[in-house]
Image (cartoon, rainbow, N blue to C red; front, side):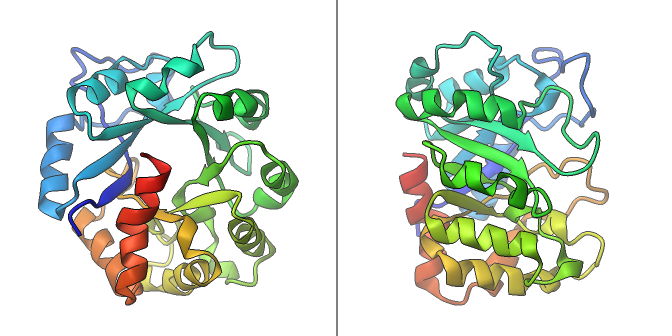
Length: 268
């Protein structure tokens, strides 16, 4: 493969040019575009999707400048329904989606994020503008919004492997809801498991979840590094996450779908 994709990464800084929002929920170290390009080269990945971090609030200057600098990049923006943006102009800039948060628990959605109400208001406009939606959610929340996602006019990409709870197993009602959504063809899913496995210290416990998702609908799966691994200490070696994907996916045709064919369709 020579057209592989990393479908989830963030860049930060340089902060003297691109300062963070004053109301942010977290303060990451600088992770500049040049460092990210070096990572992609080391992984032999040619294409990438930059996700606008909530720490930048509604300031999209860094994302737009990155997309302008490297035309092989695609972007995902945080867009609130109150923001006066001409969505129809974004596709030409390299933007392919708007990101929303709908996570279970109190105070889990970061300052600066767009919420599920924003999603419901904007989804029709996103579709007519050639964009899709991206949703940071989890399996505990999914049953509450399943019907909205099934009946949504716009395709929705779910981040971080649906935030499954490894301790509950694949029969967990929330994970079963994720499987139904994936089987419906209404959602896409980013295979990025490690954040769901930090508490068990054995990433291979996530393999059964990965395998079940592949069995359900391999045509709607993509993969992301999640670089620079925000708020994870110590951060994983990104190369080990790619190695884990390959080890968990012995079928080369499915690997080709996940790393090349599927993202090529989704982010073209």
